[in-house]
Structures are given as C-alpha cells and as structure tokens.
Image (cartoon, rainbow, N blue to C red; front, side, top):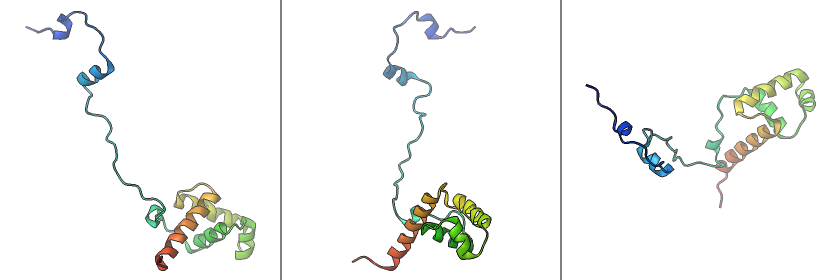
Length: 122
C-alpha cells in the first residue's frame, strides 16, 4: 500500500512568509560560499606578470608609458609602424589590459614597486 504525503491530507493552509519558507526549503544551507580572502592593493604582487614580455615588447612598453606615439616609437627603434602596432597588440593580453593608458599605468605601478624595494623609506 502507498501512503499519502502529509501535505496532501492536511488541507489548505495559510501562505508562508519568506523567512518561514527559507526554513523549510529543500535548498536551505546550500547558498554560494562567500570568499573571505584579504585583498592587497598597490603592491608588486598585485600586478604579477602573467606571461613574460619579450625584450622588444618591454622596450615598446617603456616608450608607450613615456607617452610616445606609435610613429615616434617606430622612428626611434627603426622598425615599421605595423611592427610597433603588433608589439602593442601582443602586450595588452599579456598584461591583462585593453588600452594604452591602462598599460602605462600598469608599467609605472610595477616600476614604482621595484624602485621602492631598492630604496628603503626612512
């Protein structure tokens, strides 16, 4: 013999509040875990180099961070404008940025962190 569920035989009931419904929900206690990780700001470890830049890409990044245009970098390094554009195109995903400004900021923050390690503050 099959038994009927208690809810079917109990008859109509009053609606549950959200709080009460949460208590009897089959999904209670299975919510997303909240990460409790401390966050570091403006430290060199916050800007890790995900993929190594080539020597030429590092040079191009330094010129870019100094505010030089692609044409100026091309003329200075005696390479074509298309090559400079390709180097910059390769730099962006390696740094995890999508603009010249973001790349320059990344460069200077990392550079400042390296200089700060060499010269201790008083």
